[in-house]
Every structure is written in C-alpha cells, then in structure tokens.
Length: 494
Image (cartoon, rainbow, N blue to C red; front, side, top):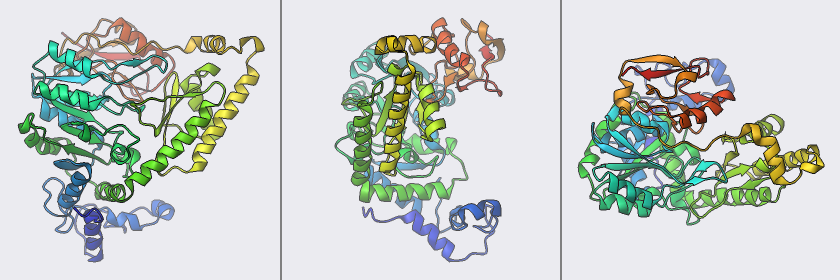
C-alpha cells in the first residue's frame, strides 16, 4: 500500500473545507466555541479537527472509508493481518485481548509483571489467571524477562490454558525472547498476547529487539503515544493469524465495542494516522536518532562516579535506566534532585533507579542537561560523604539502610477469580490487620502500575511487607483511599 497517504487527516481536512453549518456533536462547533482562555494560549486551528462521524470522516465502530483505509495502512506497515485504532489507550486493547482469548472459567497465563489493565480484562472476562513469574534482576531490583523455559513448565502443569499474556518490552525496556515463547504457546494450541505498549518503535531498526508480531505473537497492543508521536491515549491493536484459535479473531472487533468509547476522538485517531505516516517514511531515521542520543548519554553517565546504566542484549537501548545507589541515593531521591534542582523530568523512579525514555523528538541539549545534572550530583555527594565512608559498598550500606525495599513478592494464593472477588460483598479492615485476608481490590504501587495484590488473593505477609514500604514512605498506590492513604483495604466477605 502507498504509505505516503494520510486518509483520515485528509478526510477531516476535506470536511472542514466544506465550511458546514454544523449541528452535530461536539457542541463547540469546530473551533468557534472553545474557551478564549485556552485559544489565547494555543490558537484555534487545531480545535476544528475535533469532529465526529460524518459521511466524509467515517465511523470507528463500523469503518468503511477513511478510518478503514488508515487502519489497513497501519496493518501493512507492521505486517499484521488486521489492525485497530484505540482511543481508550492500551488499557482497552489489553482488555479486549483477554476478553477474546479466554472465556469465563477458562484458564489464561498472565505474567506477574503485567500492567493492571490485565486485571481489568480478567474481571470483565471471568477467566481464571495462572500467574507466571518473570526473572528478577537483583542488581537493579526489577523484574526482567519471562523465559520460554518457565512458559513450557507452566504449560506442563496447566495444559488447558488458552493463552499467555505478557509484557514485552517492560516499562524498563527489558524484552523477552518472544520467538521462543511463541513457539511454546503454539505447540500447546495457545495464543500469545503481548502488551507491547512500550515497543511500537522496535520494528524500525535492527539494533533493537524483535517486535512482537515479527516474533510470532497472535495479538499485540502498542501505545503509539509513548514513543512514536501520537497524542496521549492513542494506541493500536494488531492481529496476526498463526492458525491457533481463529475464532478469537472474530471476537476482537466485538469486544473492542465493549471497551471503547462510542464517541471516539478524531484528534486521537488523526494523530495515529499521522504517526503511522511518519514511521513509514522516516521510522529508521527516527529510531536511529533516539539510539544515538541514548548511547551518548549512557556512555557518559557510566563514567560518572557513583552512577551506572543498565545494558543488555534483550534490552531496548532507547531507555536509560540509571542508578546512583553507590552514592546512597534511592531512585526516589535521585528523581527529586533531578527535577527540583535541574528541571530534568524522568519518566519514573523506584527504590533503586530512575528511568528516562529517549525518543526521536529529544535533542542533544536534553541529554547534555541530564548528563551534567548527574555529574553535579555525583560531585556534590562525594564532597558531603565523610572520607572514611567513601568505599562504595560502605557508603551505600550506610546511607540506604533505611530505604531498602524487599524484592517483588511471589503471587499470593488465589482464593477467588478476580471477577468473582470484584463482584462479591466486601467489608473493610485496617491495613495493619489485612494480612491473611482475601482482598476485594487491587493494590498496585504506581508507577509502574503492576499489581502486587489482585482481587481474590489472600494477602500474604510477604506481599503486605512489600506494600508497607510504599505506604510508609507515602508513595503513590492505586487502591489507596481518596486521600491517597492506604489506611483501610477492602476484603471479601467469604
């Protein structure tokens, strides 16, 4: 297909050019009804593109014109059999994949580092999750790849699982060997569903790990807004038939109707059309620039005393995972310093690391500011640490002993499926009394939004201790009360 087209952008432009007497939703009547408080800051022209379904602009839920053509161009670019625009983010795509792959009462493997949107899909579908643990990277305190061997072992214990849902790349850029995992899944007649929210760029450069579709995934979801230039909340879902569970493909469109808005944003969809256009024409150069900038920063940060950056073969090298633990700084401390003193904004922090996502839209100046900030922090910390504590292991131990987080816990015992727990009668207990109780809610430190406790799981002491570290330090937790405090937790009344 001719990738130089932007069919949806052109359709909206053509509609605006008719200068219509407009009686459709939205009520702002193209750009005329937007608050001047806003338009005085950003101008008016963009708002004219916020339209709805018309004979020219097509219908996302039954596409026959411009949207249909734009989705086919997207599928051709990524080598998918069919692709869908998503306007409710990758969350709705993950929900649709799980809804389509495993019906109520059927089993599905879920990697334990999955985003909480997987839990939402399980609640909607009623499927029974069987959790698979990724490898742990102890030096960095994060979860790593899911191995084909662990997937094979899981199938031997649960041969009736219908699919595997996993995340690759992870938020930190760690990728699994999807080709080997796909082979295992398909040998057992199961589907491979990949949350590839952070990996829409992997298909455009040989220096990056293989993308999910190229590796054999049956379905994958990508957040095109994360690294490839679409507007926030703009994502896509790709399907590729490998001869396993073909009936599932028929359910995808139906389930997307269930989880997507009936009033899709044309701003979001047009941004997807344009992001695809740029990737088709310039994708390799875009990724090459991001890789060069990230490599430049990584090499220089590695040379700074007390700092180190993650590296590895199965790793998205446009990500900078940075640790200053040897200076006695947790990731939270480092993030705060970078933001408050140097106006350097990182994507996330954990107890050991900060994460920078480098894209084609960054410039050399951005990376120079990050490197300079790290160098200044190192110099400042070195001057403040007493001479007799300057051995890195001594310093780290002395300054971090009150900030150590335990490793990510093993999955607690599942008493009820997430769906049954979610729709059960619940009560509340104080958090201090929650260990041993069956949770009626999700508890997930955010970012990255990975649930430590799913609804229906018995809160283990190990999980309680892990969450308590975040609660005690006032970290953001999904599942906390309106005041942001985890003082009480819902429990299922069995």
